[in-house]
Amino acid sequence: MTQRELAPPLTPPERVDAVLREQGRAVLSPAGVHSLIGAPTGALDAWRGHWDRLAPDTYLRDGGHYRQRRHGSFVIYGDVLRAVPHRAHWQSLDYNALHGGIERWFEPLEPAMTSEPLWAPLLRMLAARASALRGTQPWFIEVHPFRIDTAGGIGRPTPEGAHRDGVDLVAVMLVARENIKGGETRVFDIDGPNGQRFTLTEPWTTLLLDDARVIHETTPIQPLDPARGGHRDTLVVTLRGGGFQGPLG
Image 1: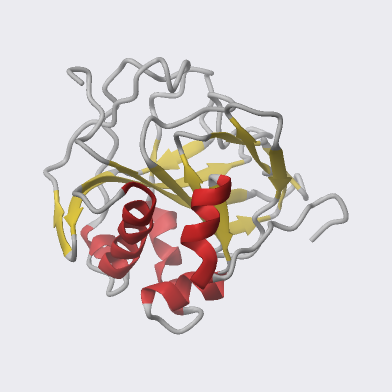
Image 2 (image 1 turned 30 degrees about the vertical axis):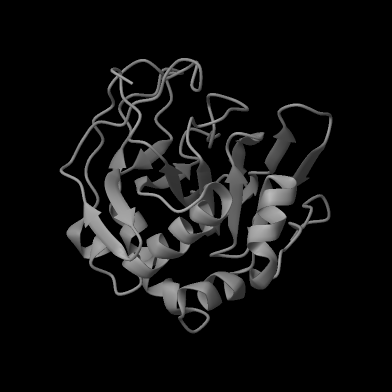
């Protein structure tokens, strides 16, 4: 960690629901994540290869070619998790001024990813956090594995800027940082001056956000060594009550 990188404020797993309700944000350590999904620390490392097979994001409106991603949708109620037939990702302009208002058909998640033994436990764990925050109900889940690279010199994890996602709960899980600087996470209260800034550096550290209360962004990344490529990999999971976002409401 460089001197300018601020460490995230970590929340013990037994306190995560209370802190999320109180502050609108909470950060779980890798050990905390593994504890909540009932797996030994490091078990999620087996997932990393999936990020080497993401597809280019062809919808970037800033002219960039720095983002690769896939997309999948699920519904969970209690312990019952089911995949939804592949569908477009849609956000309104209210939540995404750069890419809102259009259907974005990203490549689907690979079956090898969704059949990982810890896939369902992870989504169930996040649904439990959403239920603790909003009450038990069916959760409409969208999953986005991202790779932001520095092939063009700079990569933008959130080209839309500070934003909400139009959901109930957002989870941002760091998967890898390779040969990069930047990528600072910034979270701000919607209705007040409070905010936090920190850098996720340890794989599987997970930021949880009450999307109704905060806005968030991540600063651009650049390569530490310009002679080598760099990238930042994340898994973003959103949970929404009442249905998926769509142009018809």
